[in-house]
Image (cartoon, rainbow, N blue to C red; front, side, top):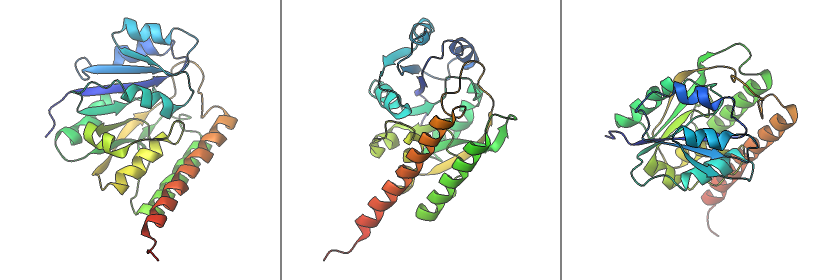
Length: 239
């Protein structure tokens, strides 16, 4: 059973408008460390995070995965659980307890905050997001036999399980790579319902941009098929 020592990773790109409210909403003493991965911001994202006591790392290469990998590189050795949260306050930081509880109880290795099982505000999930999410979950069920309901970025994972995954993706395929590798490694996966709202300020870098959304969708599908091909190659009989 894991008692505590949780670290929060927040990838952030030009989120100076959102960060003060986000930090105010994070329950005190829930996380021992907060790591903000500044993904090439041109505003005061990094400065605000430092003022709020966060560990700040800089990753100028744009990409959710690239920022996440840079943050992972500075995780303290004592961190037993790692939580990912978006910087725009679309997720409720208080619900991180729902993600941590199954891990601390020894019942799960990876916990996904499911927006589809929970309550999404009107307009928070756009139609193309819902379609892409459903398609990706269908493909994972087809290839790996597990029924996910969401690719929600709000998630918690045991540190030892995360290290076993040897994460590689440096862009939009990060979340689905983690979910696929959890199945490949036989990890205990759980989804819990969470609330999801619209970002509180600023521009949505992906879902509000059709070009970015199309690119994200392509990368996610490519990630699924790349891992499926690897599995099939590993099962081929030797000649």
